Image (tube, rainbow, N blue to C red; front, top):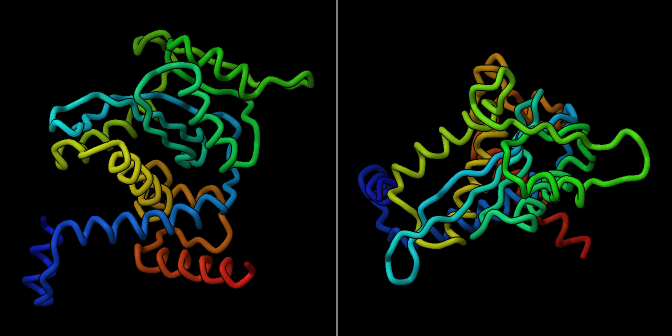
Length: 232
């Protein structure tokens, strides 16, 4: 609603919140296709965790869904995000597979909490007869000396945003929101732990400045889409 009010007050343009959502979904989809083609140079140590999101169903009641996320240790690059209904092995594999696809590599180690599904998912997703094999580092509880604070801080940022939105209408909206946040986190938002640079710049993605803007990223995604269509 703030975007609707802003457009009306400053530009004299009246649009519905439905139109704004369609724009957001359109450009997030376009930017996701473009950014997921870019290969970050990651450390090989990934942190993965899952958190609860409130998603309203068709009866307008709030249901819990799980948001799975994978982030790189050194660059802080947010590799993958997936919304699922359950916390089973197949669900854990989805986000690990996406992270592997984006990074085009297999991790040396994956740090997770004590959820059993991770152990089987990591084995099935990254098993190889050749050494070195992917190590699974399990953190049973927050009091351990080494923990998963990196991805937990990311989840704190997501919770703040989800609280402002007062829940999400459905799983598709939740996935769109998470994809948009991942793009913003990687390419636009300066990271204090990276001296104000973005994870995309720290991951040495070609052609990316230390801080991108939404408009420049949309233009790059649009140019990429036109080039792809021309080849087809």
